[in-house]
Image (cartoon, rainbow, N blue to C red):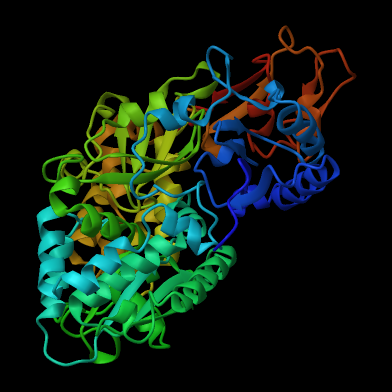
Amino acid sequence: MSAPRPEIRILVCESTACASSRSAEIRSALEAAVARLNLVDMVEVGFTGCHGFCQKGPIVVVEPEGIFYCQVKPGDATEIAEAHLAGGEPVKRLFYRHPVTKEAVPRYADIVFYKNQRRLILRNCGIVNPERIEDYEERGGYEGLRKAVTSMTAEQVVEEIKRSGLRGRGGAGFPTWFKWDLCRRQPGDEKYVICNANESAPGAFMDRSLLEADPHSVIEGLGLLGYAVGASRGFIYCRAEYSLAARWAQTALGQAYQKSYLGSRILGSGFSFDVEVFHGGGTFVSGEETALLSSLEGSRSMPRSRPPFPAVRGLWGKPTVVDNIKTLACVPPIIARGGNWFASIGAAKSPGTAVVSLTGKIVNSGVAEVPMGTPLSTLIYEIGGGIPNKKSLKAVQTGGPSGGFLPGGKIETPLDFDSLQEAGSIMGSSGIMVMDEDTCMVDAARTFLSFVQSESCGKCVACRVGTRHMVGLLDKVASGKAAEEDLGKLERLGHIVRNSSLCGLGQTAPIPALTALKYFRSEFIAHVVDKRCPAAVCRELVTFRIIPGRCTGCQMCVKVCPTKAISGPRSQPHNLDQGKCIKCRSCYEVCKFDAVAGEAIIIVS
């Protein structure tokens, strides 16, 4: 029988984001301080995976009080130990402060970023130690698997998933039960199930955060999938760059085998199931399920024509189900608590919750989870804290790099598969990027389309050639060299690429350009007709100058200018040499006195 835990637990986040800010050193310093103060019997120093509020890391939480310390440094460990753990007085300077009121908020549950969430997929993130299976079990872990293999048939498991209304969290929103049932009905004993953790979209880090923080929920979900379809072997396909996530997943697999949650005759039942971690190449297209299968088979990641669908003919020609990591994390509580419970959460046609990454021009960036159907405005202004520097919202992009741009007037759009599609965007990877008034939508469309074009596998002409021509047209628009008829060409080409591409990458690639044209056409007209960039972003259509009456000579612009184009003595107005200026905007963005003006150049044809 294990010894009881100490009454106080101090938990350090050691996910990738916090680890990059020396969180391991914080834990070591806390351990040393606790030992020096003879608090070992009453204080346990541990670690967790990601809490989601990455912007405020490294994060340290003291339980059971729920005291939340943010942006902690190794040098703060002694003060936390002496003042809080030994003296009972929390360190207020390390509390989170509300972005508007500046009020210090000591407790995790009261922080605006967390209190408006409903954490179902992320239920254990930031709470359990990813290397300690007992933490997961204490929170009901593996009860769903135990229930399924000891008292349910495979058909009953599929029926429970059907009753829940769960739709795939990888982006397409396909009914999860349907492909499970299709695979289950296929003849033969050799079948495979795969967890898709190939997260390669810019600004998306939900999958990594989940696998680092709660690997056992993914393993349990994969085991339930294997049981439901009759598979004996599963894979966690993790992009190679996610080394920490893969390592913790491998540790969790070893513990699951030791406790008979994996392996031969699981929990004394007749079900045997093995899982291994596969390190993927990290390409964006590998997230498409048939391209992922090609990668697993040792070939280049290239999509395949469908039908036959993977559930009929997948990995090595055998029936296979590929599910996103977030989909699988939903499965254990559905089986443990029932499909009707899950169906009662979220929107009628999109039950459950959505895990999103909030990035861009937003006060609170990180990973958040809300019920499906939550308005985008709630994510942006409540959980996200709004737009910094008193700027106004111009657009929000949903769905990752191939998602659509929605204007400020559309931020009451519910976050669910059908509502976003109706608005012209997609759920996609669930990345949400916020853009303020300083964003040029021509430049934004070009940036994201360029990424998707570079990630094209090249198999089909529509995607390989079409996206390249679209990027070329956007380059013309951004440089002021396009004519108005080029906008019509861009739109027609976008529809051709969307309707003719083989896989989801090509089919969604034109969405940034098409939605930018739909909702922000006036900006495109300004570029092609007036030959100017209203946001003063496109380099060939903008110039920067220093306003002498506003410049205080603080020299911040001098420090950030990469070409030494700015000069002048401290405390006196500076000069900007146009011959050296490369229009990088660094001076414009760093100036606190609005002394740098970005002015549109009007090109006369």
